[in-house]
Length: 390
Image (cartoon, rainbow, N blue to C red; front, side):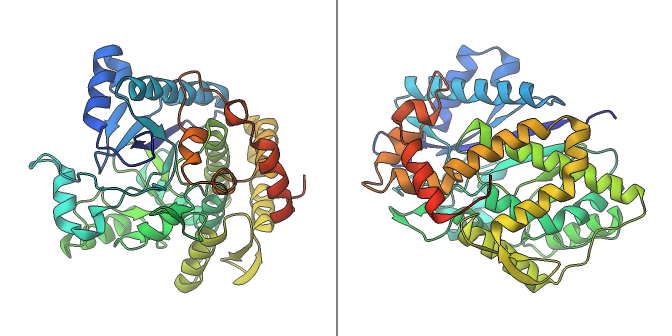
């Protein structure tokens, strides 16, 4: 079977040595344009806020090649940050909030977004991992998203990496999801019967004035408005490259499983909207360290059970893609060390300022373990809190 292509977009925060947000995107992008070939520098883009920057991977079928790409992009961002005298943080939300400029060019799309949503976007600095999986045609993309819906809360839980907000622990594993929920067109995507219905629903939200344009929806999964892909936006930006690759592996297998089910004549399940919202909130609140809501069974279960169920659901496609070994390795790392949220909390146990030194992107793509040796304590704390079966 020909493997489906995968591409990943990652959003990062820009901070000073104390972890305070810095509006440094312009200088970062300028450095990248001056020091990289045009094809490379074009992969780095501005984001909604000038305290953020985005990297866009090339498209791959091989996960090792994707990993190399993501590592290289992070290393280039670290070099640019070093010369700009700032750090690049792979966090879903800023642990330390400070006064930063939200202004954008008057004729830019981002300026129009700020004007539309006003205070909601003033301090909105959420950063995510967006996984794009190749799909031929809008009809298939819409039908695939229907199948992805039950598993989106589990992807949130696995990718949770934003526990801190405004210099304190938010109590959430993914505060990014909680912040994003304030926007119209956010959260669980509605069930759509066809591409026409999808386009009509989005157009209605635009006509109602709550979305700026057809590209504006915050749904956790959607047909891409730019690429021939399904775009899954459930995970916070990944703390490590391994965490990003895990999202890519799981998402591609979920998409291919959905395609196979559709070929068998099985459409995606209907899910009660309130239960769906409960599942998303619970995943954001607890990550993998507590309960989850099974959107189909409509019951509370351990989050790790939902992850087990997801793996069982996609195992045939993982085997077909040759991704079983990498999936097992990445899940074993997460079982030992915890999600990004768990690792952040352990690192910040003494002082929240420790987060910057522990997890900033480095120019040699060093692992967190090599940077500060905290994985042993992470492993102990995580085993105490979670009991993931290896």
